[in-house]
Amino acid sequence: MTRLTDIGKRLDQLIAAPPAPSDAEELLGLGEQVLEQWVVAKGREPTQDQREGFRLLALHRQGADKDPSFNACRETCRELAYHYNLLALHPDHPESAQRARMMGWVANHLFLFISGKLETEQLGDFCCASKPLRETVDADSNAQ
Image (cartoon, rainbow, N blue to C red; front, side, top):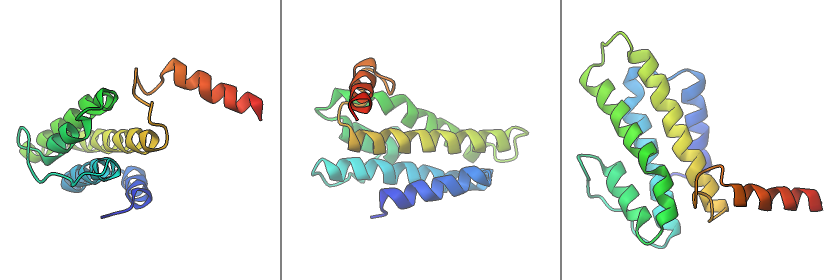
């Protein structure tokens, strides 16, 4: 399994390039690998199933099991699948470069959410900018 830091580095490379429509498959795969990290951290074997044609969505469903705060990234996963479909179905569309760039940003957002959630379990209880979390972090910062 690819380490989370390596996934983050690869996403940084793709975003800096910026990603091309031909990178859609890799970006989707990186999203899956990020979700695999979450599932493994929860002591489970990542599913090979698909949901609505995407393993990404099946991994999200598996990761959200008994953890409602994980649903905060549900729409991010769906948006990643949406951009993949746009690029796969219409690779020569005039907006393909913009779509690929957006897909890169969405994949990176998923990475940032999952890596943050692995560090701070409460992340996503309300949203990524949860006020109770910020207050805890601010209180810890002020104490130092």
